[in-house]
Length: 310
Image (cartoon, rainbow, N blue to C red; front, side, top):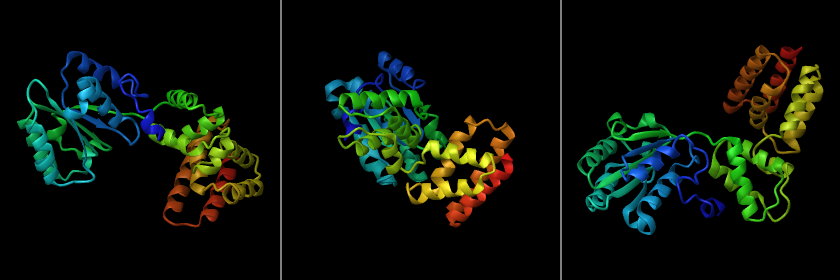
C-alpha cells in the first residue's frame, strides 16, 4: 500500500506539523527524549512521528529498542502489568527503551493509574510516547509527565505537494482537479488522502469527475450552481439539480450540506446571509442524522436559502 511505501523515515519528512517537528528534532540533537503525548485526529502523523523518532534515535536496530502497542486492543490493567512493565524493566541506562502506546485514551482509568506508576518507577530506562484522539481523556498525572504536542490537520498545499510527489514516483496521471477533490474529502488526513489515491487510480488518467463519483463528496461546481439558482429565486430548478446529484451521481444530502459549508464563504452574499445559511445547513444535517427523510429536508433547506437570499 502507498501509505506504507511512502511513510516518512525521518522527522523532517513528515507532512505538515511544522510546529511539532523542530522540537522533536531538538530532542534528537540533544539525545534527551522526554515522555511525549501526541494528541489529534487520526491520520495526522502521530504514529509516523513516533516510528521516525525511534529510527533516528536507534538506527538500524530500532526494532530492538521500540515497542508499539495499541490500547484499543487491550484496554485493561493487564496490558500495563504484562507488556509495558516487562519491556520497561528490560532496559538499561546506556540504551533506553521506547514504548509507543497508540490510542492511549482507550485505557481504563485503572490502567492509566498503573501506567503512571510504571512511568515513574522506570523513568531512567524507558521513555513513553502516548498518542490519543482526545487528550482530555488522559489523566492529569500522566499528562504532567509528558511533553504534549497537538497535531493539526495538514494544510491543503502541503497535502497536494505530497500527493503529487507520490503520483510522480508511481508514474500516475492525475489531474489537479482530482487532487483537489481527494484533498477536500481527506480534510487534512494524510492517510485518508493517500489511501484514496491508491484506491482510485487504475492505470488511466484520474479525473475530478471520477473522484467525485466514487468518494462521498459533492461536486463543488454543482453546489455553487445550486446556491446561484437559490439566490435568484429558482427553487424548482435548484431542487431538480439536487435530485440529479443524489439519484444520478450518488451524492447524499449530507455531502451537499458539507459542500455548502465549504463554498458559501466564496459567494457574494453578505456575512449575515452566510451565517444564516450555515445555521440552516446545520439544522438540516442534524435532522437527517436523526432519521428524517432526506429529500424533504433537502427541499426545505433550499426553500429557506431562497427566502434568505431574496
